[in-house]
Image 1: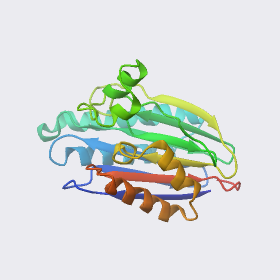
Image 2 (image 1 turned 90 degrees about the vertical axis):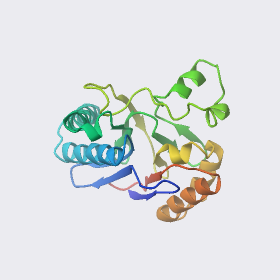
Image 3 (image 1 turned 30 degrees about the horizontal axis):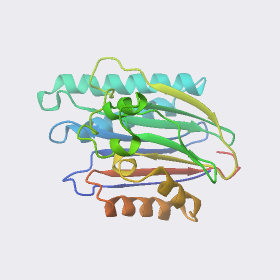
Length: 240
């Protein structure tokens, strides 16, 4: 498997995004987290979530769905406990999207509006479901996906890691094949790039790191004002 990741502060004063590429003999996983909160609290939330996820997945045993569910639960506990212990971090939280994979299957999980896409060489499909105010409006048919990109409440998420003592993660078991790609990203990317344009970048990709850079550059050109993080995984048909 081939992996690459990149994060960009963009127009923000600090980068509250974090990403993970975990490649060991026992597990192969990727993740993206987008923090929220007061001064440095968002950065702390996303770092805590990713660090906890890394620790739990590195030592996990059993099925992938159970491993991700448990890791997300413990990440939530870690961020929430820290937020409760420091007034300057009260209310902080973050999104979290992750996947465990091998050459034939992957299992994705998410909380919040950071996304995971599956690209099969021609078609891109959003695997995860956003936990956000505008996503709910789209699901109800009240607004379109294009209208959601400019909605004044587009940054309001309805589920986050750390803001409550408990949180439910959504789990998505999937199959994929040689040549397919996974794209994980924060909303600094998917909030401005259309799925069609994103697919075009993936279709023309010859180097994953360069493609990450190109996607971020394009998001900045389109006016993204947020931190932007991209992680790519390409299934090369070998052992993960």
